[in-house]
Image (spheres, rainbow, N blue to C red):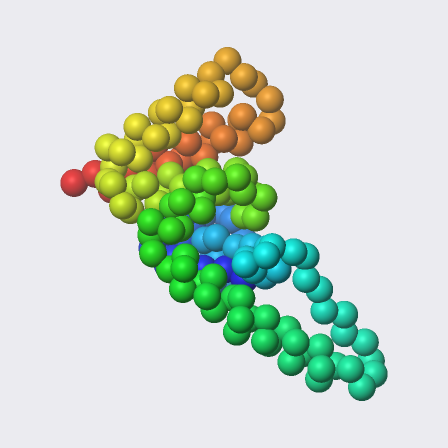
Length: 153
């Protein structure tokens, strides 16, 4: 896995969701399996066994970080790039987490009014639904809107 941490997004995200376990660790705002960040996306794996190939596998993995990971991190180091990634189809972070972090990114980039409008539009998409997934989405939305109200000038 390779990723990019945006400290401000993560700080706000964990202020909105203080009970999540990741708040004690630097968790990436966006992340992807390293092979899928390659110019020709593919699954990559390194199998470490208790034999004389450990150093070779470690060198291969390190080279992948240099060749693929570092360019990925540089390409995604701006808030615009993070926002674009979070706005896309995301499996990692989970689509729900991507939507939540997107709301925070909008808050950071465009301010409270834009973030509120975004969350209200997201809530409109799930209006009338009452399943476990939409309840989690509504719970985050309510916490996020409360956070926006708390930080109001």
